[in-house]
Length: 220
Image 1 (cartoon, helix red, strand yellow):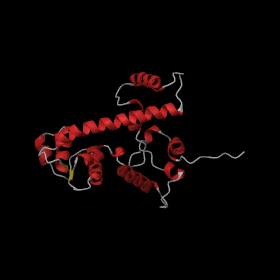
Image 2 (cartoon, rainbow, N blue to C red; image 1 turned 180 degrees about the vertical axis):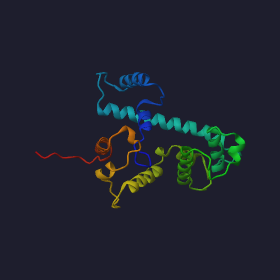
Image 3 (cartoon, one colour; image 1 turned 30 degrees about the vertical axis):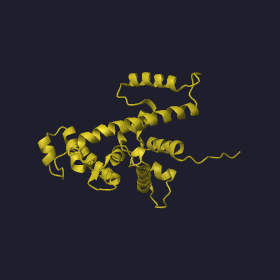
Image 4 (cartoon, rainbow, N blue to C red; image 1 turned 135 degrees about the vertical axis):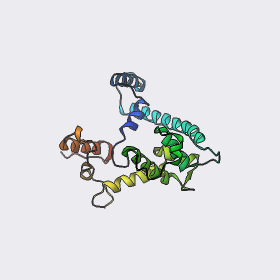
């Protein structure tokens, strides 16, 4: 889940299928291919165990790719080769990636008054994630901390902090328990694609299927 409580559907898609930016048709072809690969006993169906094995495999691949990329990105950003990447080094590179020239990226004001809203929000989120990953120096990260910053899903500490943040933001009565009702009342980030009723029902379904794993006993 993201820090605002919404499901990170892109990560879920990457875990199941791998990174893909294809069209719907291409994604459907990929899904058929994945089904065949994950269908261990070749009976044409996927059971829970086969899905568990496939997801575990893809999560492992995701982590290995993250570690591999992290080494090269960290080395490229560590301009002074001191084994640490400073916030300034990272931020200048980010601004260049956004299309700003190097001179502006190095000298632009920190208040970002003239930047687009989504860029400013990304910078604020990055800064918050940076602060959480920085254990030894608030202004610089070593290579392991940089991996945590870029991929918090692989850090137990980051995951626990993220879970606590999500629950705190959704826990209306402050009892440190997230109920189905509290989860369902979260605002829809894209109101144009759902009616209020459909959105709430979707949230309830997500809560029951993916969050509340307590066995539900039926009375007869």
